[in-house]
Amino acid sequence: MKTSGLASFAATVLSGALFATAVAAADLPPIVIKGSHFFYENGTEFFIKGIAYQQDVSTNGSTSATGKFTDPLADQAGCTRDVPLIAALGVNTIRVYAINASANHDFCMKLLADNGIYLIQDLSNPVDSIIRDDPKWNTELFATYAGVVDALAGYTNTLGFFAGNEVSNDRTNTDASAFVKAAVRDMKAYIKTKNYRTIGVGYATNDDAAIRDDLASYFNCGDASEAIDFWGYNIYSWCGDSSFTESGFDQRTKEFEKFSVPAFFAEYGCNTVQPRVFTEVAAIYGPNMTNVWSGGIMYMYFQEANDYGIVSLTGTTASKLPDYTALSSQLNAVRPSNTASAAYVVSNTVASACPATGTAWAASSNLPPIANAQLCECMVSSLSCVANSGLTGNQTADLFDTVCGLDKNACAGISANGTTGVYGAYSVCTASQQLSFAFNQYYVSQKSAKTACDFGGNAKVQSGSTSSSCSSLVSAAGAAGTGTVTAAPTAAGASGGSGTGSSGASTSSTSKAAAGMITVPALNTGLLSLGVYVVVAGMAGMGMILL
Ligand SMILES: *[C@@H]1O[C@H](CO)[C@@H](O)[C@H](O)[C@H]1NC(C)=O
Ligand SMILES: *[C@@H]1O[C@H](CO)[C@@H](O)[C@H](O)[C@H]1NC(C)=O
Ligand SMILES: *[C@@H]1O[C@H](CO)[C@@H](O)[C@H](O)[C@H]1NC(C)=O
Ligand SMILES: *[C@@H]1O[C@H](CO)[C@@H](O)[C@H](O)[C@H]1NC(C)=O
Ligand SMILES: *[C@@H]1O[C@H](CO)[C@@H](O)[C@H](O)[C@H]1NC(C)=O
Ligand SMILES: *[C@@H]1O[C@H](CO)[C@@H](O)[C@H](O)[C@H]1NC(C)=O
Image (cartoon, rainbow, N blue to C red; front, side, top):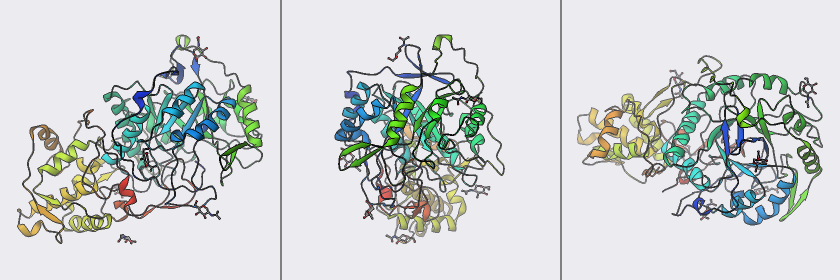
């Protein structure tokens, strides 16, 4: 991930119709996974010849939290201009980092299909993502990610989804991977619940030597329902006319020899030597690598301040840069030798062992709970003391400090720790729901004294009730919220993150930063790696999709 500035992605409120179902003609055959490789349905092996396709709002390296974010799959003029240029490169897959799930993607997805091009789509966006230094997995993120799945699952040229990009990126933030893996698990289950075609959910990692082995093992280990379906590797170690050995591609290939699911380069294209000659392409699709890797995605199409592009835009006119020609001749020259599915005997049948937690790796293999919005709604209706609606993010953060300070036990049910693997059942709820839970815990501990449900006029008593459809959920969570709820949201309400929360991105922590409105040190989407982003209060709260 090498782009410069990016704006924030404001509210995505689904207004009803989902467009994905409207597509029919000129469908591409879906790509399926067998063992460590991708195949067309007819059994021919599929290698990803990919390019990252998303334009940054700012092409001058500034970091802007207010500019508009462009969904490239909703930009008909852009697709009309670019898809033929992409196809001529010999590309068969694009990677898009963020979409507006409520926009219509029919035109671009059909044009891509007509040109034999598949899509790998990241589920997060610049506002709604798992933050590496303050990670959470909650119903709001679930709703956003599920919205992207809903928007794209109907297109047969949707190849797969990334549930995260470079979230844990060094040894200080590996605990965040527990939350990302929970996102993988929940989105895999969601795709099944909705009876969509089987579409893989993977993760795109950075190439940090201290943690890359543990990262790959962690996301591949344990129960298959929690593990990634494929592994994307963002790797920039082949610069200029390097070689298989000099670049370290030989070592990386050895490391993935036994990996039980497909692995490919989710970004490549080092630009420290210019112009780029893309000699890595012959290696990626050559006999040294194709038994282990399923191709790669070059970063990137649009020329921007970070200087990774191969096409520059002047107004709306696209011009090929010299790197376009170099990439095109390399990609069009390769003929990866493929193994037919029927002749492929899967040999990598064993998943990795989960890495032990210690100094280098700090994510527990015990994952955060399923982000079940129904559970949270049931919890709130059961309470006798709740937070007022309409509190700002800062008020909510202050009130967390207050109530958790008064009674630490009040907050056990809403806290989450990816290192210890101890998560409150309500750690997945919205900030407002969590605040209500903590208020109620305190109120109950004070024997329901009237003064114990006040909090400066920000709380009120209600007559709590638990409907029959809620009782098993709420009782599994337990009175303190420290029980284990294994129920997944049902299909109908699956993407309902519709809490009463006013501070969207935030949940369980007691700090102001955790209430989602202060400084976010680089959101974890592929668009945002250089620099620091500031998400202003309110904006972070808008990213909720209501179904
Ligand atoms: C399978 O389908 C792909 C894509 O349409 C095609 O390129 C390939 O030749 C087909 N393989 C066979 C064995 O028909
Ligand atoms: C850079 O881009 C930002 C955001 O689009 C814009 O506000 C700013 O004026 C630009 N600066 C220059 C020097 O072009
Ligand atoms: C997302 O798309 C919808 C429908 O086209 C549109 O109303 C909304 O403004 C878009 N949101 C953003 C942030 O562009
Ligand atoms: C394959 O590996 C061998 C041995 O390391 C190396 O000499 C050769 O250049 C590699 N081929 C490509 C296409 O990188
Ligand atoms: C919220 O709190 C932060 C940090 O204390 C502060 O910078 C910001 O101005 C506050 N926002 C509002 C709207 O009060
Ligand atoms: C998680 O728990 C460990 C061990 O108690 C502690 O060191 C760490 O600070 C906790 N992390 C968070 C984010 O609270």
